[in-house]
Image (cartoon, rainbow, N blue to C red):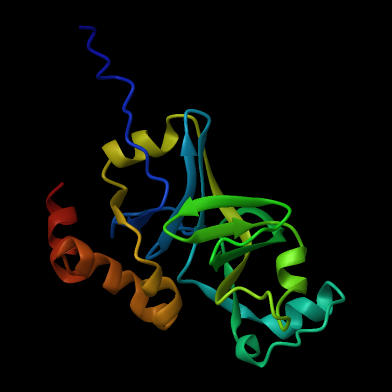
Length: 192
């Protein structure tokens, strides 16, 4: 029996990261992030509650596609994180078969190839999409270290929170999965 306490085997793929009120990094203050991939190389996720002043139509125009699907017109693009903010990432369900997809689990996929956007408006379009510019990345061990510093609360992601609620309600709804509310969190953080 070897004690490997130092190598935490927590795998946060498919979990939400809820930024604690003490989060000093402006990129992540009051954010809800979905971890899409987490392994010994590090972690990758997208923030799912920070819409930016750009609609999917604007984005499609910029990448020279036409947004055919009326269901997705008017939907905002999101700030997905501070890495590669000029690149689009599409969080969607179901996973489907696209060129470059991370299977997040629970029927969710994160696709960085253009084909998923081209499918919007066709019969193979995903049921739900959330499009971000940029993503959040962590080096090996970094997310575990940040959790040890109480930067994040984590809870298994509920895709309904991402796709069925307006963005301003998602953080609170994720906290309710844990049975906490933001006001009581601020108190706790104050005594840390």
